[in-house]
Length: 484
Figure (cartoon, rainbow, N blue to C red):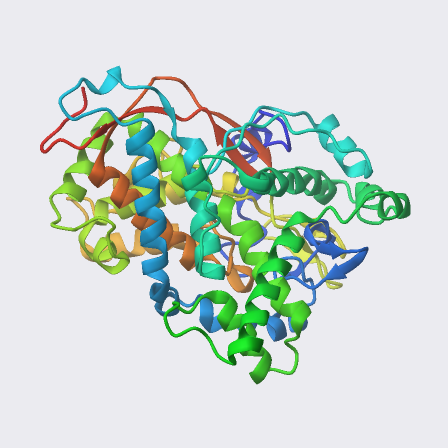
């Protein structure tokens, strides 16, 4: 999928040349290569100086050193301690949708006001061209965004887990302080730089930009304010408020006492990495699941029947959902396969020895190579002849399969699942994203009847492959309701 364009050139290349385009470089994670200059585009800067960040660090030893102090905070068992914070956000989402869009249970589902639910899962946007992104990179000029932005469950949930309190976007129904818009704009600017590094000099390394423009990194400023507030409270009280649930920021600050490498700058980097990337990595699959499920009525009936007959209460607990709702799990995996959040290959550099692929010429040292989830996930040899279709059942055991056959097939699909990256650079927020996906979707399907308006969504690849125009009709749940 081309950057900023609605073309599927990489998909076409897969059809033409086969798996060499899609998977040969990594072969399912067998070959380990160093991160390339591609990652420099996503580095954070403050007043012209680069801030170390987990995602953009290329030095593997340094990356491991700064990950180690906080790695346990992202373990599934640790993140489950924040479920109460997430539950509050889910309740706010359901209340907002109910109040603004859901019709009473005794009315026809299609009579209600159409809800662009993608806005409430994060945002809605209109297309801007690569030319626009080019001018964003130039620096001092501030082009007003044309994107319509509203509240987001993803952003509220991420800020609740990180700082103990949601931003309140769902409650207000709008993008306060243009927070999401600013994040979105930054990604729009950085994505072209990853493909054309010379543009980085016009943006992050342009001395005129640093001279004329104020510090435009709103995310950095937002995070710094939260850290300053927390440190101020700790200075006064000497300890964390016992009535407040521990959050990720508590973990970051605590790491300062145990690891010499962790200072105030690294605390800021940890928090910024979570906030800056977490919103899209959650809201994109949420929109994908809603859109794809509603376009396949048989899937909608199966997943709602499972959710509503499992004996769970909303907001659901993650472990209960994981154990009781296997079909919902298959739906989430299939949506991530067909529409992974990131639409560009994660580039690596060929080492001095070169790279020899099976039955292929030697790739010279220094060559930038990558695989793209959007290509790998459509490989017929891995995911079946119907790999282009939305079929959640592919993740479940078929009636005619033996247990051994199923586990081998599942393991092969999982080995080539690049939804959250691969290997040592797997997205650190993967567990957080999965917790939110399972909990939010289980509650939505449990509490609300939904039907698509029939309109097609639109997508665009700007690092994250974002969607808009996911419109649905909503109705408060009626026991035993079916699609009308």
